[in-house]
Image (cartoon, rainbow over all chains, first blue to last red):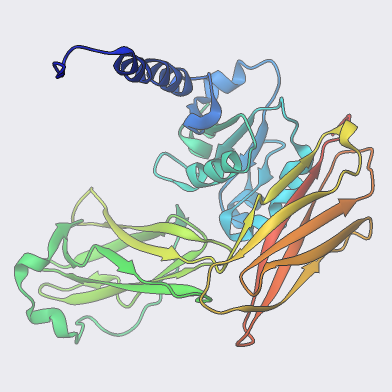
Length: 139
Length: 230
């Protein structure tokens, strides 16, 4: 006995239904603010200033730039001196405390790299400051 | 961007092989022709830096002055022989990227501004730095109520060489460690057994290995003990 390919049996229905919860789970996963799997989010200076609790500032610029001037309370963390600097950052972090990483300006990518590495280690929530140090100074 | 070092020399014309290269290979930017503007540099295990040379040519009838060269990281230096490029003159910018502790895909941008064009030229050095060791996870966290529970991390050798010896570098006498060989020369388990702590503290341990050829590598493991107050 043959069966038309488009007539669903019970197994076909199960197979057809499997993608639905998968798709829903994927949408929930990528919704902004719902899950950190989307990686660090970009925030503006104004947005951070509106937060009730000050974040943990992480300055991803070079040590020389950091020593010249930085956001008050910021800690220096660069890829090049990661193992030396990370313990200081970790000692100031709490699971509920937001971390905001910045570098020099819009064109600088160090903040993305550092924020990505922190997120990858399970530090959350981590944000990237839009416009970096330049934007902070302008405001 | 960090200001790059400028090494001024006496050359206005570069005696390179590429001067007669096909003009199609040259890209116009910042009032100069560049060849190349993007360089992918292969990196070997244990290599400490990568270098790229970006040649330029002034094909105009006016001199072009290089006003600034800025790198995107303190880890990169850019060197130039002559600031002013005469008409039909050639030159090059040598970029050296020092890896320090970096691994994985790296992109370093050197931005060059001239008096010939308000738009700057972005020179890209790309490299993928191999990591000889992989430690997972590289951050272990203890909640305040977890006291001094024992945890472990896995060390995987990502090279073709076998590991002869593993040592744990630590300045913390309240953390004891033990190394177990899971797969000879290739995979190890490191048991970490801390004493309970009250205040929040973060420390790092160094997993130091010696390969069969005598070369050494160190991979860090970070330990975070969350206290009731930071």
